Image 1 (cartoon, rainbow, N blue to C red):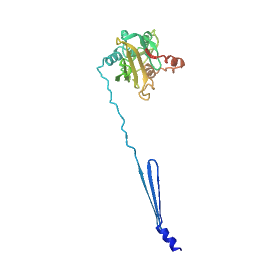
Image 2: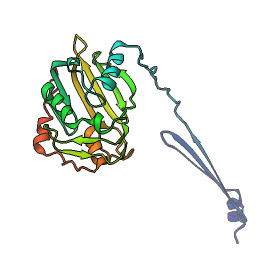
Image 3: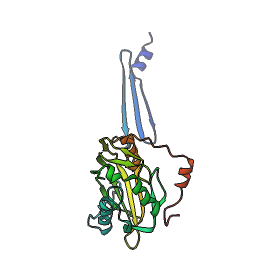
Image 4: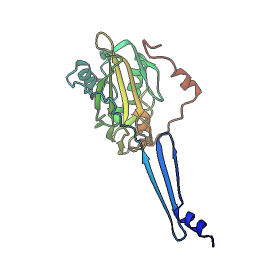
Length: 241
């Protein structure tokens, strides 16, 4: 055994350090004839948290005249939840839904005369909520509905009133749907969109909205939209691009 080598080994100390962009590591090893000791330290530089600018919550004014008018039309003049008020719709009125539409005023009122939803489900209610004014269009009111009621009457399927389907007491528990109404300068309904489902997993309409959801609850199958319907629905709403 070499005394000089043993002495030098016992006194040997090795240090290694290196630097990364965001982390600093240091490793130190001390060795002797009887013990090896290792230590490591890690330090990290954490960037400061930058707080996001959160805009204030904007709440619609329930007393807004267009919101009040939309609520009136929905419950008592639409033709769906009640008999329609023909004068509430402008002459250039357009209706759109995921499956039915676009319809002009005459075709829309004729469709309401055919289905007579409010007679098939006498206690039908939209249970409307969440009224707001479109920030990009001050004449447009958005809101949600969740239809409910019991089909104790008959649903019409033809304009002559000869083909009618009994509701058989089916209970309607609709999914949440998005509706909107655009008013003209005279506060007549210029555009009505309905039936756009927000959550298809709620309710018992199989993810369908408006009349199509009601058909499902009563037991009437509704055909899936074909390419012709999809093409027709590409047409822009009144005043659209």
